[in-house]
Structure formats: structure tokens, C-alpha cells
View 1 (cartoon, helix red, strand yellow):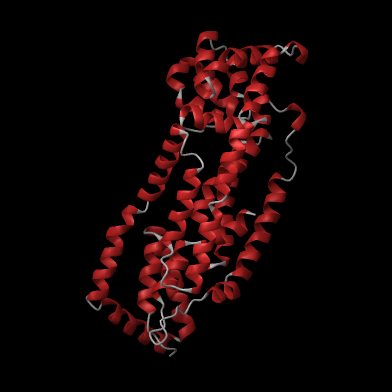
View 2: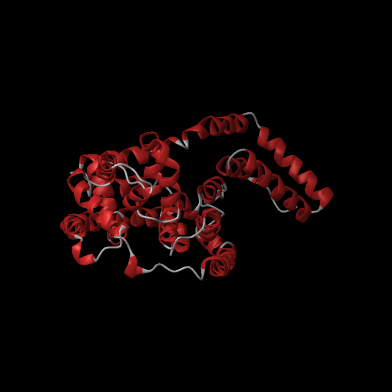
Amino acid sequence: MVAVASGIFSGVSMIGLAIRTLVIILLLAQAPPQILRYVVIVCTAVTTVCGMWLAYGEPPNLIMKANLINPASGTPYLTDGFFLLYCLPAAVLTYACVAWSLRQEIGGLRVDLAKLDVLDANAAAVRFLQALRHGEVLLPVEFAEAHAAELGAHAAAVVERTRTGEALGLALVHAGVAQPLRKLLLGRFLDESLADALDRHYVLESQNLSPGLDEGEVVIARALAKLDKRRIVARRTGLLAALPFGGLLVAHALNHQVPIFLASFAGFAVALAAIWSLPKMRGAALRAAWVEFSEYLFLLPLFFSISLLTRSEFFGQFQQLIQSGSRAMSPASMALAQFFGSSVLSALLDNNVVADFAARAIQGLRRC
């Protein structure tokens, strides 16, 4: 699903979601750290390589598509059909390799649903409550690492236990953290009003007492259940964001005069409306959006530099070099050299910039 969605919603936007979801599942299955590192690498392949089946899967695709325009008709040489014809087979093959590799590495891991902690069993409600109350959503291990100073000598033990999938409250009890600090941290992690119930629940769980004695779990489950209606309404409203996003993508495909950035902004605006009445959650969404946006600001000087190079006829000289190389080496050899050169530059700079550079360099070339 992530591989298919990456081709439409862009792998850049899907990779964080894919990594976070898989890490949560693998922590519940108590996967070792090396498996978690492996999954992060796999997510990169799934969202970038598998997502290149359509032009919208990766920003470099769109940059190449925008630069390689037929001057006679004003239409792009790289149509959506081009990506389906040449990139879809590669994406499918990559997906098959990834699926086989995942099956080999984590096929034997299982999440015991019957033994799930009350917070893990209500993960969606827990994350909604975290965002609602605190404006951030943290995994137990992330929370433990962020509060290492307060945990003091217990920090290493708590972090290690949460890293293996143990519930935060249980890790605090097993590590010997004092009750007042446990309640303080559990309140910060979820909600202050549930701190007593959470602590009582984990103390009983650490002693392997009968579930019938655990009134704290009942209180927690009821509190989380009360959020379901509000959470589901927000989720459904947020899902409507796919309509303007998809509609504007189609409009762009039919008419390239429609700016493609309108699709992402329209989708974000509708999704933001779903949580606009929730100030801390709204703030968290806006901060996350700014972080994503600002990560691309460093590319602006590079794109400006390429524009200056274009005006100085640098790419005209580069095209002559490519033509001379094609005649001397054969077009296939020159294309291979360009491929390796672009790969090296993408690792050193950024694939978006390299896509812009490479597209301008071959614009207007004819088959030698």
C-alpha cells in the first residue's frame, strides 16, 4: 500500500509515516535493534524506488518532466505514460525484492494481541490524546530518551526496556523509579488525569496480579474510549484532503498550466481543518509542516545557481560536450557515463538539484 501510495502522494511524504508505523509494530513484536535499522533502509526503497512508477512519486520526476518540454507543442516529453512504461516495471521488481527480503527477515515475528498493554491495544486513541494534550506524539523510547535527565541513574535501564517493546510504565516500575516521578512522567506521556490509574495498573502488572484487581486498566480504557468519537470525526475529515489533492493532480495532468504545488497546499488546508479546533494538535501540525518545508529551503540557492548557469549558456556548452562524447563513445556509453555521474552527484548534493541540472543539460538534444 505504501509503495502504491508513494507514486501518488510522493515518497517524501510517505517515508516518515512508513518508518514510524513499521517501528511501532516491530517494537510490539520485540524485534531486535538490527531489524529496526534494516526496516528503515527498506522503507527508503519502498517509498522512493517503488514510488517512482508515476511522475508524482518523487520530486526529481516532476523536475525532469517540467524541464523537458517539447518547444513546438509545449507539452512535456516525459508524460505519465512514460513513467508507467519505463518506471512501473522497475518499481514492481523492486517491490518483489523488498517483499521477499522482508519475509526472510521479519516473517517469523508476531505480535501477541492477547498480551498487548492497554495503551498499545488503544494505540490510535493514545496518539490522539498525546497530540491533543501535549502537542506531540512520542514513542515510549523517544519519551524516555527525552527525559533522561529527570530519570537520572535509571535512564539507561528505562531506555533499554522501552527499546525492546516494554510499556513505558512497566519499564519505569522495573527500573525502580520512585512513584512520584513515575506519576509525573506518565502524566506527561499521556494525560495528568490518568497518571494515578496508569501507575496503579503497571505496579499490578509488574507483580503479575490477577487482571480482576486492576481497576486502573478499566479507568484508562474508558478514558480512551471516550475519545473515539472525536478522533474518528477528525480522521474522516482529514481523509477528505485526498479529494482536492487528487483532483488537482488530475487537473495538472490534463493541463500543465495548473501549478502542481496547489495540490499539496489544498490537501494540507483541508486536513488542517479537521484539527483546527484543537490548538495543540494544530500547532504540532503546523510545526511539522514548517520543518518539512524548511528542509527544502537550502535548495533555493542551488536552483538559483542553475538558473544563472542557464542564462550564461553553460548548458549549451554542456550539450555540445555530450554530443561530442556520444559521437566518440557511442550514445549508449555516453548515457551510461551520465548515469554514473548523476548518481555520484546525487549522493554529494541532492537528487532534486541533479535532476534539474541533468534535464537542462540534455534539453533540446537530438539523437546522434
